[in-house]
Length: 124
Image: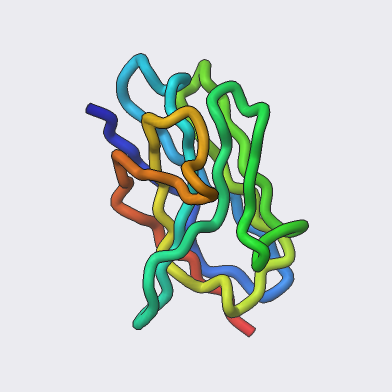
């Protein structure tokens, strides 16, 4: 069992930056592929970014490429999402996710555990 707790959300103006953190319980964090998803009001949850075990591979949604960076610190059992050049369309609840698979499956992340979410609001 893995518990994920996100933090770092908030209100920011367009063009600003935020860094989300996701702290995981358990001693097996390093064995999980980690990722971030987001869900805007009235929309489906969508993939944002993923990072493999060891951090050697990353993948981003086209909408955030070049602006967001995912990273992980296995010693702290934490995954981060650095978000720069934020846009109003980035407004959503952001969810941390963990997958027991070594990487994406057919380009999709198979999620075993979800965090509770943290709100990010970008004002214009």
